[in-house]
Length: 302
Image 1 (tube, rainbow, N blue to C red):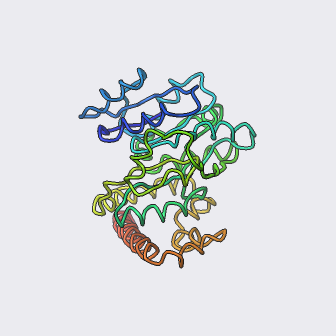
Image 2: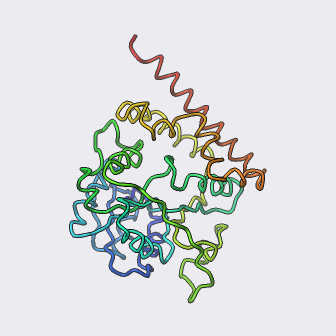
Image 3: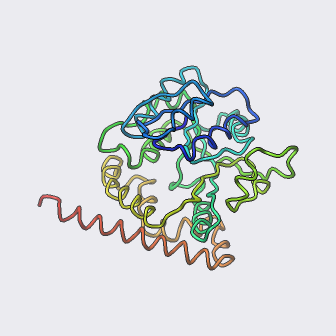
């Protein structure tokens, strides 16, 4: 299921990657939040299942859940994502072990400029951690969890984290292994698109490519500022002592722990320039979060 909002620049590439999957037994649903461009027109070239719902990602995904009534698994992706050709097949094969309710999927940020490379470097540290969000779920677990919370106080903030909290009460969330695909048997139709954005697809296997080639630092910080204003809602809902909340908002883990655990620290001295850029971004985001907290503290009634 792909959620969209004015995504005419990205939607076709995303849907082409779904159509090119080696696993053929899939159903593609697009749920659009009243786009003002050609998003839905383009989407209908690839699937007849195009719906309109909004506002909010939670409401869009719940429509996808309802419309995919006969599915065994559900995958939620964004319009600026591209699936490697064997990704869904690898997910289904991994889920056959039945030791988990959902999967984290390794994510590779696309883009060739410096900040793209910094974001690509940073994002790999988060795979499979409390900072990550699952992408593929068992349908029965999604149903038992009651879908996504459409409460307006949660909408458009941390839907993924909120939903994963409910899923983890029903079963584990595992990380899909990214095994390099090796020499291709045939050229993947989106291989040149990925290469042009700084990544060799032959070095990766089962991954989601996240197209951030148009990364704009100002817009990135504005987005982080918006989310920071919603975090208290999520924290109040699950409690500050919740294990995931403590990691997601704990200074030590967000600035050090997630980058050094399980031997990941070795990547830092190996890439000093990217490490410096990453911590510069972390500093800016942290400053935004602290400033928003101070504003909220002053606004609270005494």
